[in-house]
Length: 211
Image (cartoon, rainbow, N blue to C red; front, side, top):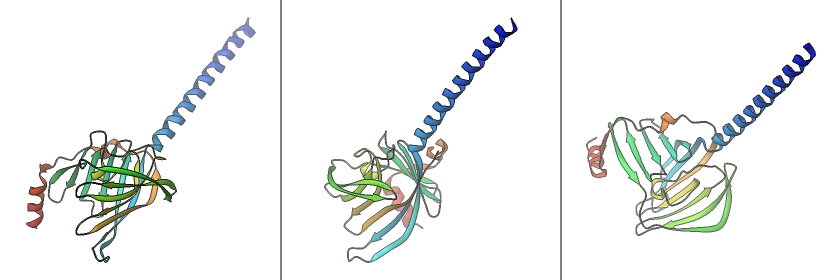
């Protein structure tokens, strides 16, 4: 009889061990999948005037992303933007002014994908060109990261993560490029909107002119 019960106990132990192993493997793959869709990217930013001289160089900002959400944090930490690509909207937040302004995608854009590719920070990217009535930009986008991030103008127009972006404006040309990428878990609290007063773009300009 003891040997019979020992056999039953051994079977129960083996069953529990197999179940624990399966749960561990499942958790490992879930964590790995989540890590591929969230992380932190360091970007470098330069702005060029029409004649080619650099008017603002050496600036950096940090991007936190998780699937369809992003948070850009600039040098002084007082200004940042939060975007939700599923809703195609975001907010530029300025804690030093206690306000935020709504930002969103441009309308009637034409996106042309090319066959040109290059590696940026270890990821294969494909070049594309975006044009509109008063808008022109070229960018490199990767689909090797399972998330969405684009500058606000392109929000909702493309899927993937833009790692390099150059926008041609009437007064200046802006250029951003990713310098470092870390895939890691990111807290959901980073994508919560702060308690700031919402203003229009016109009101924001008026506030900035008063400073």
